[in-house]
Image 1: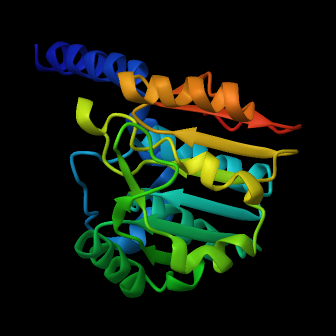
Image 2: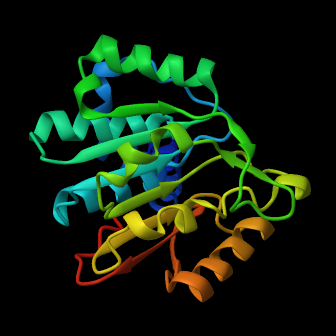
Length: 233
């Protein structure tokens, strides 16, 4: 009886895992994350499937300059990937919350992966590119540093855009990078892509910049320009 019950339980677990890519994605990411120990997770954390897709893209499509809006577990994974693989890749992570970015910074320091990322603290403030009274990252003092690269990977998981008042808060990311984005060959991922605000942001990016984020990865959407291997696991 015990064997039959255990077998039934095992089949149920396998069925659930088969329908959910998170356990498999975490398994594939574990070598990048094990050095950090317990991971700091907020309610807005990006899915492991999305993080795996980003890391796959960086590695197999040989990205040279990555910028991320919104620091988190993705920051830790990418920094670890760059160090472990010895990649020649610039990685910039922007966040508006100094306390949260401080936690990420300590994780990077303790794991010895600080050289893999440039952390930029940029509080949100009124911005010339913001829509409908929204705010965005104040990056004026970092403009020259950002302009030093043509980014071929853009990850947009911030700032917060969880209610109607701030629903379009993530729109400025690509217009801001217009002159610093490798339009010939790039990857863009927007998290929380099925919310009303993000759907409008995607529509505007496609109409204004020709960046079409149609490929679904968990709760993210991503798109490519140029010839690339598909990194979606």
